[in-house]
Length: 520
Image (tube, rainbow, N blue to C red):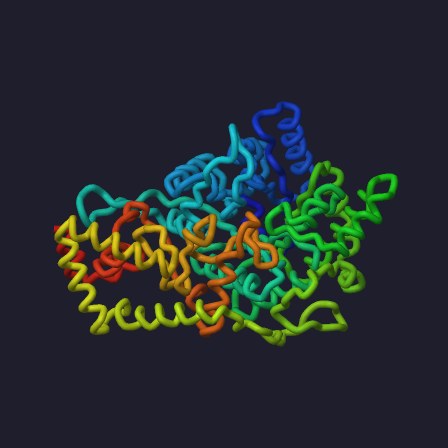
């Protein structure tokens, strides 16, 4: 079957329409039949290019989107299946990806996912074995024919290539500079690792949407971007305003707009549908390649009205773009404002105060950088000496265990080390992701933070700290230019220093002679 979504994004300049559907928890026949009826109506309507299926949104359990995706395929419509990292480890994600490929599903949106908040008999323990960057990389390698090791050392089997059209997300709706830079830098890493299209987080500030496209143009990224329109709703908007839906921002000013129109006989529905249609029209004007439309308890006719109205008013978008400007108080913008248009210029904004750090933390950070430069940088005398010592220690299991305990004690005091054995401190400004981030994010921030606070609201966002340190030293390129970082669970509770020097961790610094010796 033709994948119209992919064809239009990659081979034409046409504007695409994606509509989001949320599977039910379990199989509720009448609700499932509504989703199928929506699909049939969308096929007949002809203006919807893909139906997007969420994967346990908000950290709540739902029917797997794969099931509904197969039904949508049978009806002659392309599904876009969300694939989230929160509920499966890398084996589960690979297995599920091969299942989707076998079913004929091509469009996949790779997501890290929200932290679980509900489940059978309590809140489940999440996986987050991979993040969205790692999954994008895995899917891209599957498209080339995944190479898997055979029992004989050095031998591999190449599996049949898949045909995924790989998408990823980004949120430009961040208040702090460090939060916003983290989103943009991770976006670049997603593209480098194989993302073929981008869908934004939902938001209600067209200047931020404009900013994202300008950022991508400045860095010569030609990946198509689809803007997310989430139709305003009295109840959902209040939840977003209270920061109870990770990464979704409704400001006090916007909430007042919602309350005002919510007093109407239709509870604001007509006003909110018109607002959404204007968002879609502005997307067309700004140069977005499509709109992704979602919302709470919307009928097919509601979404059809948004699409039809947006086409009718598309040529007038400049006249109402300033109406859709609801920034957070004190929000950082990457580019300077253009007062005439209500959007941005191409001139980068001043960074502001980006160097505020606790002095003691900076002293510790500088000390670790000093040590790393002399003992963990290949070809230095300290590196060669340390590698020789670790090679000797590795020959004695008892000595290795004692060394691991010593290393862990030192690194716990300095970095709150969790003993993963596959250390990412050097890439992450000497901050431990397992200690600082509930999702153990090693490739960039998730989209759930709000004003520098983690979506779990129990700590500052780990990645804002990383970004601030790297920004201070002019080392932000380390994020977007770096390879996807994977953590090998087999190395847990072993010495990360021995693993580093002997080339067993993700850095692979060991000499070729040592690697060959281990194989023999």
